[in-house]
Length: 317
Ligand code: PYR
Image 1 (cartoon, rainbow, N blue to C red):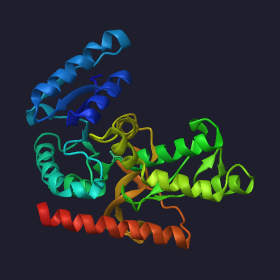
Image 2 (cartoon, rainbow, N blue to C red; image 1 turned 180 degrees about the horizontal axis):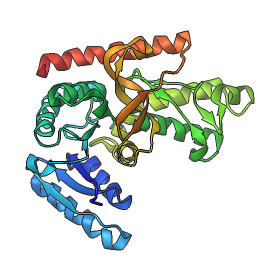
Image 3 (cartoon, rainbow, N blue to C red; image 1 turned 180 degrees about the vertical axis):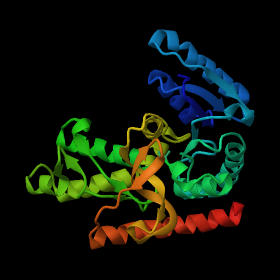
Image 4 (cartoon, protein in one colour; image 1 turned 45 degrees about the vertical axis):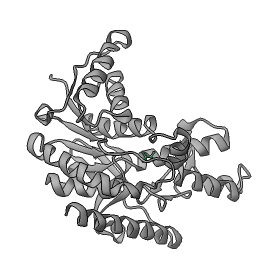
């Protein structure tokens, strides 16, 4: 059986980490694309040379020629500019909308059957640009944000409760921005919802509120620390979880920016919700019941995403 082919558009920090994880997990062969073809080729060769040590077989090439992504099963897009301290993700729209439109053209031409995962910010609006300009079906184009945001939420909860991250599940809905909605009611330690843990005296509501706030600022906290660039290890790991679920038809339930057609009362918008990812792409949108406050927060987040999509339309529409 031939190996899967995975194209990574952008050979920066996330692109390189993605390629390394793909090797370590033996998910397939990699084409690392970047306008700086030498950087892409250098990283591809370097990572491939770690194969004999780590015990993986993968062919990895770097290129600045879109033709090399032909026939890819999965494309993960990180091309574009990252934030610098003081910037919000939304501030990137002017720079990144045009970049994503160009990448979408390359995907439309060379691998229109791929499953496409967008990581570039501002995330939800960039997924919209990718879908519009690539012409791929909506269920084959998604955004990586919810897995990352809930990983951050899980970590902070695990630290607060002094338990393994493995036993913490967490749920984050909405856009990948300041308005994201971490849902404590659907976040658990070994199945026990966080509000019950507050009642059990494991923590206080004030501490949970602070964790929710830290989760929403999770990307910004790292941008401030790095001073140059934004997070890359956790974003790459999150996108790999999505790619693996697609390639292995695992049907994992993962929060992703997915196209809503009336679910949650929202129509024609890419925004973060739980979905099932399998060989069919986004196979199902999971619609959970929200209380009035959660619904209001989700709708506020959707309104913020819609504004960004309108701005993207003016730029590349
Ligand atoms: C984040 O760290 O949240 C990004 O969006 C990269």
